[in-house]
Image (tube, rainbow, N blue to C red; front, side, top):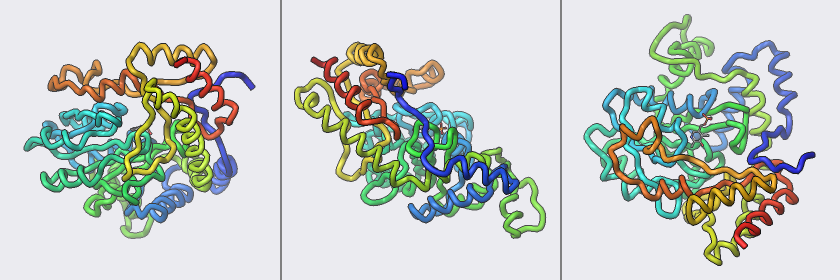
Amino acid sequence: MTNHIPFNRPFIIGNELQYIQQAIQTGKISGNGHFTQKSQQFFENQYQFKKTLLTTSCTDALEMSAILLDIQPEDEIIIPAYTFVSTANAFVLRGAKIVFADSLPNHPNIDPSQIEALISSKTKAIVVVHYAGIACDMDAIQAIADKYGLYIIEDAAQSIDSFYKGKPLGGIGNLATFSFHETKNIIAGEGGMLVVNDERFLKRAEIIWEKGTNRSAFFRGEVDKYGWMDVGSSFLPSEIVAAFLYAQIEELPQIQTKRKAIWQRYFDELQPLQQQGQLQLPYIPDFATNNGHLFYLICNNLSERTALIQHLRKNDIHAVFHYLSLHQSPFYASKHDGRKLPNCERFADCLVRLPLFFELTEEEQKRVVECVRSFFK
Ligand SMILES: *Cc1c(COP(=O)(O)O)cnc(C)c1O
């Protein structure tokens, strides 16, 4: 064992290797086999999602969403600027213009009160990101979407097993996307899922998923040959990925319990520093649950954050900042309309994420906490 505490460590917890072997032995390791169907059934039963399709990433599921909504050049999509590039890229690939929204003052999530001013006759959709698995204020956002006839897509990459007023995240928007990347709560290496909550998209989603063909309907015996029906691509993961994922799904309760306990320990141990006004801890509104996806703290400024990360690194602890503001990115800065997004910029400069992964031990966590405390002394 080394002394180093990584930011993340991928893990296996149950039957991952057994299920991969089983997939190989049954002679099917391409997509949409036994473990893909078992995984999809789990999510549909557990969270009442109308239809789920495993994908090779959340990025792919976002790209499928943009195809499903038939996004055209000149369409406008409202997206928080404090997010991962894929949230925006999926729509840029279809030629859309991204209208970036600011975060709330006290949370990286999109500020619903600023959305309405961003809507034009070209606006097609609002993409929300439930940052750290904490729900956006979906009633407020739904009211705006209904008023202007806009679609809602939930980028629920970080939101597995988290809720808004009792409703599972990923089950609220017309479409939603999840990630099973190795940094998320349940993992498959690279992996994702599209959730279709709006019936109008059910049939087409499956065709886009299967390279634009009605192959899935063919294998169910609904048509006697399959052909090219629509645009599409190869969005399915192999059964090897699905087998790994299904083993993680079986241990979801244990994973969630452990992650939430780690999260809570960080919160309790660092609370005195917040009370002394040294830093800010995560805020969770009453309408949202916490799924223990990530633990962050907010420093007072960029130089303090840089120094904290360096201090942790000197002590063999890997802590990391998170998103750079997309509206200021080399790719999009010249396309952005110039509005300042101060809350987003503050999170980009001041937020730091502490190590949080399933196998993090209490000893390791104590070291992280002590190290943060010693920095602020
Ligand atoms: C992780 C993440 C993604 C990308 O997920 P992949 O599965 O790696 O494509 C997209 N959006 C958000 C908010 C994420 O956290």
